[in-house]
Length: 386
Image 1: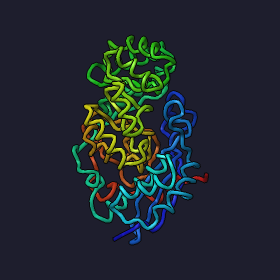
Image 2 (image 1 turned 90 degrees about the horizontal axis):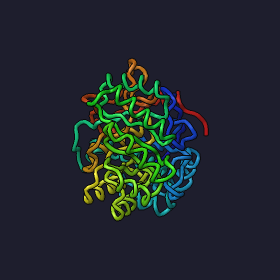
Image 3 (image 1 turned 30 degrees about the horizontal axis):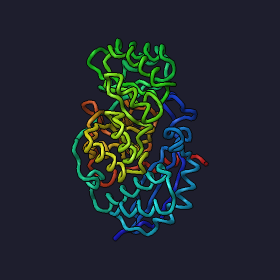
């Protein structure tokens, strides 16, 4: 049986299409760590840690991981721990990783992705088969509008809709008046048939401020309000006071967090990441708990390059609870973009081929492993030093 022969890391920085920010973010997206696992037969699997030092959980419960931290954790702890492990055993992969170091889910996720990619390639099956099967041929995509000026945001959503996007998420949590104004302006710009949702990234100071602000937006018609304040017990107060469903993101990292959310009836929706729980294997645990509790989900992330985004796509295709539109990129190399901006956050990408966008979403790849090869030349082009 093929086993893990070596694990290497590479830091890359993709050029962004435009600045993309949210409340609390202090460094640019796209400077992420790649992981390359080579099997004993020479087969290669790829993973990615889209780690940001200033993005974490609530009240210090989970903390940011920079690229440098991820690189150290992988090289010093995770790689030696899983060296020689045979493919096809993600349960043992995670047992070994969790035994050697506590926490660091983004580092573990990057290894997990590469391991699933390697396993799928060796066995000749796509990753969604390894996750239990493909429930969706196409996964719907939500385009995220960062903290832009209102005029810039309105101009962008017009083209985004022309590109075929059907759901738009608007970053808020800065100033209530500004937040209400941008949501109303975007609704006027896109009309009644495009779904809108908002994400405050814990930006409101109190549950009361969040409740007052969201009530001013209610006539716009929102699918959900994401993480209006910090803290499970505090988003529960918001959820009880408004009619719009509340989504937990920073409050929901792993399956145990979801158990606490259920106990406090804090949210009707949970945003599942491939990274927050530590990889695809544990992300499916999050989905299972949500499904059992009747909580609906989407797949969200940290604006991954194509390498990490393929993991998002396979999770969104396979997780039973992930029935909502997903806030994930439409990963396309520069030569395939042709002026498109819907779902695109980078001016180039690391995949040899673009994902296929159709009917408002991404067609799930059926090739072995993650399904689309990584472009080694692009990795070299965008590689930087730590």
